[in-house]
Length: 452
Ligand SMILES: [Zn+2]
Image (cartoon, rainbow, N blue to C red; front, side):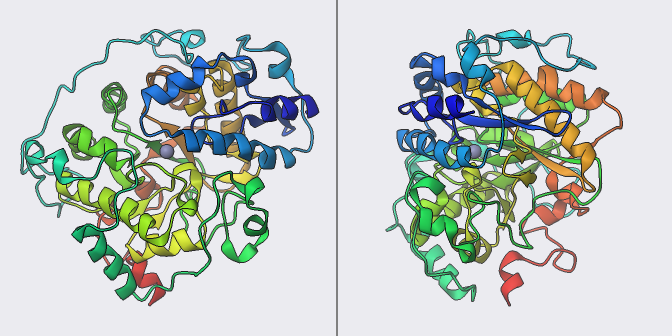
């Protein structure tokens, strides 16, 4: 373990492009917690560069912050081995027997950061203005996506400026909401290790550093074997393949969309929505939200709510903070803007329901590690009394390949059967409660109303 930690810390800015530590923790079948250094330790520099190039949403600040956060994550490890660091990027084989695979799946050993770029599939179905999703009886018709003009929105992948009329109005609305915003300041980039006082301050309730959550955070599904299926960071050019598979299997999930991606592919966002998936907010430019000022947080959430409303005609009532980076200040601003936070299930610091799929694209995880990690999640799911919410992504070819080729076919084939649904559905609410315009206030109190 020591070796693993040192290897990870020795990395420059090559740690996970998604901000997770270069040291990962796995729970094996017997419940033993192990850790392994990221394969980044021996991966070429181009791994990280490739991921960054593929996603303009990933900033170098985020990557360097991730390198720093390896330290705090590593400190929580109680035992483990450095098997991956010792063997380098060697693939190995998965430790369980696949119950099912998609016959058209890419061989899993090929789903790596340097995999050849595949041909993407154009969106086959676009929906005309006025279309409504069949699972929201009171939904307004969708607008004409072609009328949306990126020039009417902020620069992609940057925190929007604070001096626009829109942001000024949202700042005023937050002030008028009656929701008290804690007055502690932003954190520094670098996670818990670079914010020791904030990390130790329980009154901040900073999820990143200890997993603190509030009653209104959505972190699980109440009923055992119910699986809240989630995909973050899209819509991307690979989302069409994921949507096609989900439609074929009659499965629906929740998409936490980045505003910069939504204005880039509004017709695809409409397809997600009309085909019955839940759409929720994941910020405009994918920053660490606790590092942002109150006004910047408002701009990130406000513009993402706006592009979704402009494309769909409805405004989400749920959001997920990038990297799970939320504390009581960020929570309160979200609630004041009528957004409930949704995380992913976390049993302990070393047992979270994060598939690590994002690390495939950056070269920080092999497909074997991701599939073993997913198998560990399923074993943990069998041990808890509730259902669960799993973190996956639809931004990269690799994350979609592992989902449609392995994770979803496996999930469908396993016993006991999982009830795989959007998060709002596993909260035992109708899809209409996912949006402000269609919400039934008698069954789902609006977030800002929680404070009144
Ligand atoms: Zn994300």
